[in-house]
Length: 189
Length: 176
Image (cartoon, rainbow over all chains, first blue to last red; front, side, top):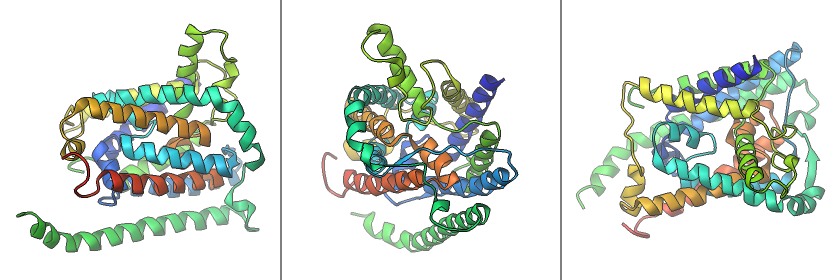
């Protein structure tokens, strides 16, 4: 049953990623080059929606949280390395699988590179984790810093993300209104 | 875009899917898939090199042993889902070897693109293992739990990704 669910959820995830355009190099790069932020808006909107649901259901006792431990240096450094890889490939570990399914040949090389990346890290991980151990702070979440009800905090957090996404969209529209003149000026050359 | 879903619709769908996955007692993630696959391959050729538990150490599927587990099947589903979406899409996605935007910038050099992809893929998963997760587990799953690790990871990805992308596509630089 659990295995069936895994495949079913995976299918939904792959389908959504494809329909969102997240499997396309150009959309990822347009987001990172700050030309068209649709992928960022898509990601953060889904986070904002999830938070309300997750914390509502948790208050009802229906779900349990499962966070990844924060290691300030490890998480930050890992994120930065990931970001560079993200800009070079135009895929992330999940989307390159989907892009491979779509028949994009370069995505296969991302998967192969990824396998080598895991191998390289696993070889050195004991040394790395030994150095990073003192930066381990455990499963920290925003609620640990504010003494208010987590459901209320979750709602505020969702609204904040929704607001950021909305403002980003608004600014993007404003910029695009001005853009056509710019494009015409540069085209003839 | 062009008959695809708008970001609002897609974001809503992913948000709901994420909640349903939580309800089922599981969590979204793809890094473990890479860890397990690599572990399988390596253990097949060099059975005594590294302990089985070392592959998924510190990832979102940290307790998982080397087996075709939930996350592996999830990624298999992702492949099928993307395939189905591609085949049922009204707009044909071009089966391109190399993305058009990349060719415009670096020229029609498939092997250079494959090298970029391979090298970038290495960085992606090396970074993921170091941080303990990737976009799915840290951002989509982690940030929706208000996990500090997810927020730090998400910010770091864009803090490095945006300058790198701008640098790669800077005007007048490199091969045309």
